[in-house]
Image (cartoon, rainbow, N blue to C red):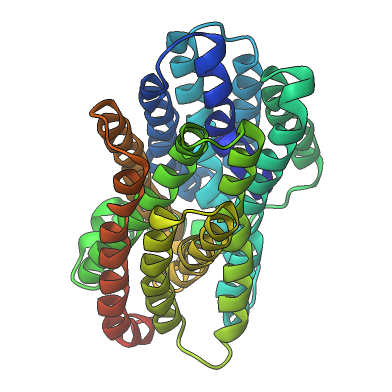
Length: 391
């Protein structure tokens, strides 16, 4: 499911250069399309995903899967930018509702000592989906047209969604939490699932630092993945090579996530994440200044290892900072705030592009939020011992 989520989230960036040429619209007009899809992700993450804290992980995952599969399939029949904008928003709602529950469900069926690692492995499907989408797009668009990307991105989730109806279990932790909640209907735990608890004395500083790290990370990742195919095409690359180069960002993320996950056996996870963010800052600078195609591809891969790899491990770490009763709410709102960054970043990129910014400036400015994410995680590192002790 994480793989299909990544495939459909990234699909629009891969077809944007082709659509801009086919529909004879400026490339900058796709900034609103990118933002609409990511706004839908934000809505789904903030309001659909946390609903699982009331009704369970299983029904929300299944419903979200069918929603994003259906609207992704409908996107293949879009014929204008406004239609594309609406369909991407609706697809995003389903995508956003699924992911926090995939994280929570994986965490809750894993033993405590392996939760971060198991969530990292599961979430690696997300960048792998983006990679698969990139290679599939590069191979198939020229032969079958841009619509094939959405036939795959819509048809596969619908098939898998039917399989989930038969096989997906409910979280055992949710069942226990629901019984305890019903037994104490008038206790303070009545409001435990509310986002308000994230800002109580116990979690306030942790929540703010997690949100800042998510916002900055996803702003950079989604700005790069949304605009790099278009920017590289304008730089002189073929569409297929530009798509493959962009896919290397997520492929690097899978490698980085695996390396960081294994390294947590010997080193503190948040220290590793902060160091990885710092390395990504250097990678972004090299991507911005890269002249040769080979150097650009290597630097993009390594930047993804730092940025996306850190995000993969961060998802697992965050599940350990909050108890079961608010875990989906905590993860969902962290992702939701990050999704705000995914909306803001591509819009900023579209504005800069419309103002005539060149490739160097369009990429280099993203080193700043990456550095802020590193600082936020270093600050969170100081709080984590107290946060885990509280549980």
